Image 1 (cartoon, rainbow, N blue to C red):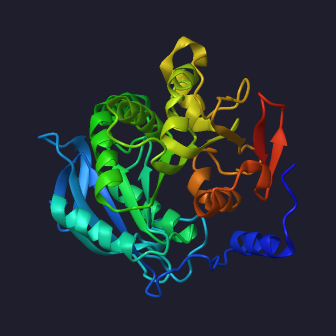
Image 2: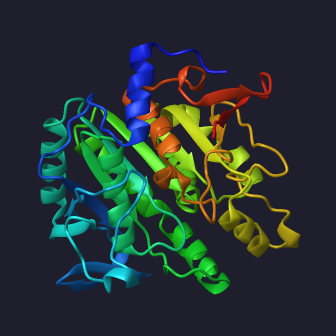
Amino acid sequence: MGRPLSSAAVRLSALFIAGVSITCNRLPEDRIVPVFFATDRGRIGYDPLDYGTGRNSPEVLQLGRIDVRIPERHTIGEVERPNIKTLYIEHEKTHLVIRAATEQTYEDFYSDVRRTISGSARHEAFVFVHGFNVAFQEAVFRTAQIAWDLSFDGAAILYSWPSLGVLDTKAYRTDYNNNEWTVPHLQYFLEDVSGRTGASKIHLIAHSMGNRALTYALNRIIADRRVQPKRFEQVVLAAADIDASTFRGLATVFPQSSLRTTLYASSEDLALKFSSQIQGDSGRYRRAGDTVPDVLIVPGIDTVDATLADTSLLGHLYYGSNRSILADIHELVAKNTAPSDRFGVDASGKPPHEYWRMRK
């Protein structure tokens, strides 16, 4: 069981879970979250600025910034967007909306990111790599929501690769190929973020199939030795859609490249079970983010079983939509707190087969 917290620490954790902002970081009064982006998707329009499902040709990253306003009626974990009930009409008080969107040159992008980081209290940034079945604007809104809900004071950066944004077998296979294609682009981008932003702390958050691209990119970064060891502060691997055996073989890169790496997994993740079926052999190729038939334990990585905490329909979006898990990630990013000292996380198993469980 985690170490008992002081009354003040318990109060702060309770406030965050209840939806009240923790005061250790600053939140903008205008509720605008700048989302910096890098994408190798092909551009499909300037007004509004948007990127589609195909690969960019030539193979270069488009860079830019999209300012997202968070509504006054925002609920932690939610990405409030128009739906059929609102006739798909945006309302600023109830929906995340885009206030400005600009594609930037290489120099302008890094100058803007540096200004944002230099104006933050701890000079930090995070890079979010989305997963399968995600459209570009959907990824932008999710990045803004995560930044706001974590009370993140720094540069929120999205890396978006060409997902078809469709949930079926054919689209999954296309996304799988595009995810492999994006690896060298993600590698070079992370090297630039490391060397050109002036960030003292850089956190990496990957979801679903984004974990696959990130794992391979970090292996290339370490092999090429263009980034200093442990350059990245926190690496958060949520619902990892990568073959578990393959991941185990590649995972030695994480202790080399980060201060701490946390793998969140669940036995109720239906999207990962769908993925394992597509891989063939009656689903025997389990994913790293699945805890069936057992929890994946890898040296140098903190594995957290999030099954009890997540009650969503597919059990796949808990990294951004579950308050308890967002609070846990907040502790990681804000304080590098070990799982033994985090509120709401209990130890399970015994070393060297120890892992952690989120409470309900």
